[in-house]
Picture 1 (cartoon, rainbow, N blue to C red):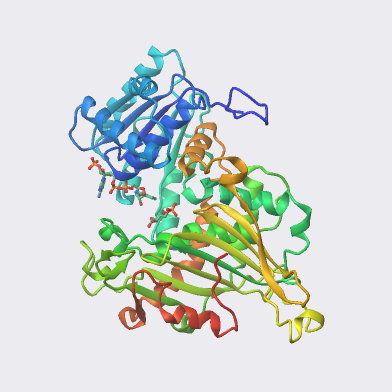
Picture 2: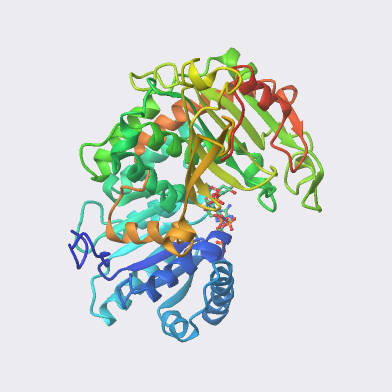
Length: 510
Ligand code: NDP
Ligand code: BG6
């Protein structure tokens, strides 16, 4: 075990290591990664001797880099409502350095290797490494190949160890994902590769397995016998912002469905794993993705609703239309909203529709999974004048206002029999006294501990593409005519409502 503690009830502390962040001048490094490492370090969850090296091409001095990080870490702590520990920052900043270099320049990687070795030797610790690839995807392969060429990938070696954490998007279709897997595999072993999807680091997402397999009341209801349908909504109120160049080549299907939504779907639908080891869990998740019924071409045109936001306002704030966004093609056919229905062809879920929708510039930010139980028989209270009664719904609020709600029927107190739906609620803040920590904290810690449970395995990423890529391909054939416009601040195009209403159902948010 790569940890100094094997007590399951205590958080394990990783062995001393160097974290190298490629793309250290960028948004992710500043907004999420460095603040998360600092927070872990302040909480005593990282070894005192941890070293952090920011690697990027931009010219900047060590002091400039530290000053920039101080500002972004300050903002991140403020966003979480946490006081910034200035004294600890001074000690932490002494462990951070900036290494200017190209992503395909051998000499720059050789000097990186020498810095890692000399810093580790000075601290009398092994030169273990976590390489975090926080660059756009074009740089992934050159970085990995340079790490291999200069001897830092240490394929198959366990002492000192090295691991890579690789950001999304992982490929843009099945073929490019397979090629990327093969290229990574030439330089690192699969157990050294940590494909990150920050959704898996969210407490509420980790809790899906606990809810299902840590309680006896749900599992025997969890199938086509009792469940009518399942909905997954990933709604954002933000627009594409400054990410036009990336987003216009991705769209909602690549940006959210292929990764975040496929993980939510597989966790909600998977069979109980035999153990909680990374492979046992991921084996079951892959089986769900393999059971996804392909959406036939005709449905990809008629049954998949794609939308694009127009100009408008959200909460009084003016929003430019998607096509007017910087670096977006003026006649772009890229979807900023998508909704569709899918089936899992396996025993448990036979005949149960899963409705998925995601979009930018929607009415509010909300990620939620709702499990809708079957209607009660048309007798007793399900007849007039009391019924028909709504179905029971279990909704898992991934974010914000994280929690779980169960909707059920109750008699309104009084002399007449009147029945109304009520909600039984659990929310993280009132039960645990705080909002859950940022997902990157947990994922960085797990990568340093070598625990890959919350990371995507190569076959998992390929199985997700096998389902999503054909949908993208069919939809893009006569793209512009297939896109429905929607106003910012709504729930997407009317066609998304028609999609679910055609089955006699409604979109639901608990
Ligand atoms: P940025 O565009 O900010 O890029 C990060 C850094 O990479 C830049 O500062 C730049 O550093 C370098 N870079 C930029 N363009 C290129 C290029 N074409 N080739 C090589 N290097 C380049 O990206 P983010 O920080 O936003 O994201 C990094 C990765 O994380 C991406 O893969 C993204 O998809 C993923 N991601 C980001 C999220 C976010 O919230 N930002 C969320 C989820 C995933 P320099 O020029 O100094 O070398
Ligand atoms: C990223 C997407 O993976 O997830 C972004 O690239 C999106 O487009 C973001 O905004 C949403 O993350 P979260 O944690 O805010 O739901």
